[in-house]
Structures are given as structure tokens and as C-alpha cells.
Image (cartoon, rainbow, N blue to C red):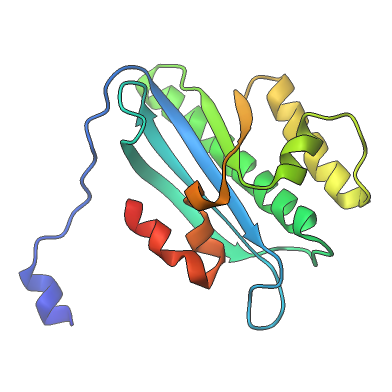
Length: 173
């Protein structure tokens, strides 16, 4: 394997992005999808241009076990969303500093419950989920995140990081 790898050209290639550049983060979670019954969360952060929204350059991704026991899919999705928002804000600030620009950050989730809870004043049934979503709402209010958006599960890129059956979606990159 090492001999084969040393004979091939390896590298990272980025697509040329046209128009205004923005950061898009796709977040997803799977309740009880691990072999031990724990939940898996993940996200993909990419740079994309306004001219051709299908062109994305993946700059960060993570998939890992949720830190707390999730009692519902909303709980696991909220945990994944908070980690995604937290890491994406850090990357956004770094990219803004390097390129001396202001890049907008858009977050995409396929959880209708989490999406509705972010934009609704209604409390969730779990206290910890309420606290997680309060952090996300504060990031929106302060302008760190431009918007939280809902996306259909079939278009969710981060699905492949959390569910075995969806790993073909990662080939989009």
C-alpha cells in the first residue's frame, strides 16, 4: 500500500469559486446508529461561491459519537448542531482574519424539529436541548451565523458521516 501511494500523485484540489464566497455547514446526527447504541453526530464545512452553488470546497469535517446520551433524535441533532455551530464560527473567524473579508456562515440541518425550535420561542421537552438551542439562537442574534436552514434528507451531505446507509453522499465531494 505504501509503495503504491508513493508512486501516485497526492494532493488537495479546490474548485475556483466565483462571486461572493460564503461558508456552508451541513450538520446531521443519527440516534442509536452506533454498534453500542450510542448516537453519532457529524458536520461538513465548505466554502462555496454565489455564481455556482453546486461548487463547494470542503475545508473541515467531523464525525463522532455524541458526548451525551440522546433520548430523542431531536436531542442528538441538537448536539450535532451545537458542535457544528461552535467549530464553524471558529473557522469563520480564522478565514475572515486571513482573507480580511467578511464571510457569511449558513448552517443546514435536515431536522425539522431542530429547525423549528431554533426559530420558535416554544420550549423543547428536554432541558439540555433547550440550553443547546439557546446557544444557537444567541449565535444567530449576534450575527456569527447568518441563518439556520432546513434541507431535505436526500440532499444532506453530512448524512454519510452519521449513517452507514448514506455513505455514497460523501462522494459528492
